[in-house]
Amino acid sequence: MDTEVIYKLTLDANLMASPNNSGMETIKKWKAEGKIDVLEVDKPTVSREQPTHGWPGAPPKPVPERTGSWKGKNRPAKMKESGNANFKSIASILFPGKDPLRLNMTEINTIAHLIRHHSIKNEIFVTVNTKDLISDGRRDVLKSQFGIIIMTPEEVVKMLPVLSGWEKPKGEKKAPVVAAPVAEKPKPAKAVAAKPAKPAKVAKAAKPKK
Image 1: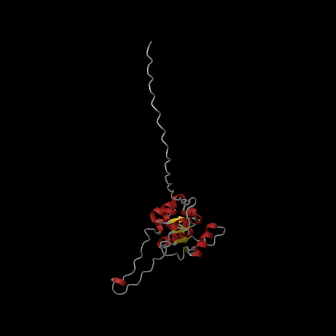
Image 2: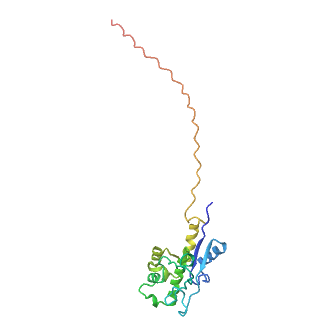
Image 3: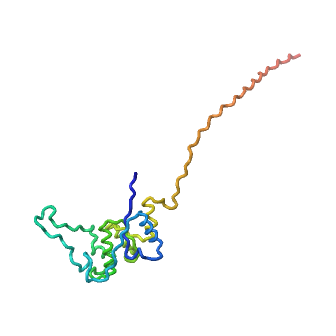
């Protein structure tokens, strides 16, 4: 028996509360039915006073205190990089030409959300922010460099049922079942009576000349 794949989606800020979005209504329904896992990004940070770890100007992440030997379990845990998907690399794609240290808080939040999405290995980042995340080839570059897939809610609703096998693509019809042809029984050949041979013509004897 095949194991059903449950896709994990990251929802951009305020998407769950967005009104009049039919795509999001379907995603909420799938979430309630247990068809997908959903992570809502943290509420946007609006102040630089206490920036999240990894943002410009933020304090470094705390390292576990060294105790005893550095060997084995007592060695401080090494923080894994998210496939080079760090603040600077993402900023260069989304906001080319801008100094990463001079981005506004909305731009910083957008980058932080993508880094979080990539680090937890969710499959799709869902957003309506096409300007910063999709347009001018940004989506294609994020996918090719980091494997980050960006989609709008409408695109997710159109694509996910086919990927998950919930339904077949539109326009794809089932092949009609055609019964195997039944071989016809050979008909017995009709007996044809042979026509009697015509009697051979007998040449008449020539009359004697007088």
